[in-house]
Length: 196
Image (cartoon, rainbow, N blue to C red):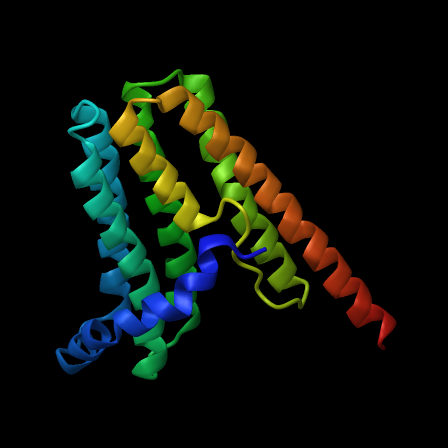
């Protein structure tokens, strides 16, 4: 169950021209990672400062940019032969920072405990994927509420003003996504050990 993550190859193909332009201009993949973090922060600020539904368009555009930068940084590094361990580390930290910056926007419109719960839950799928990769399994992405679905939920909140219900769905869906990834990784690692 890959959710909207299954659209990643299609989306990457749409960004090919942007990637080529960045490569031709010598843009650093790390710059794109930071641009994604700033886009996430700006989306969080728009969510906090603008009432629904006025927040919907700026939040949607900024989150679209955040997803584009998240796609472009690694792809640009691979295309230009600039993949590094430090770049991979920055990419992971940037993704988490962008997620948390977006969710921080809810602090102005929802209870602190719910925002904190949703923020913690939103990081769980990545923790599971990174733990699996550290154990030697392939990196597992996607799921019912991955990064793309979280962005879509934030746009729904910005458009509707349903901040509390959206945060509850985001938190529960992220936890389910972590469990789905963990189950897959557990089977994958078990099969690898049995095949030795």
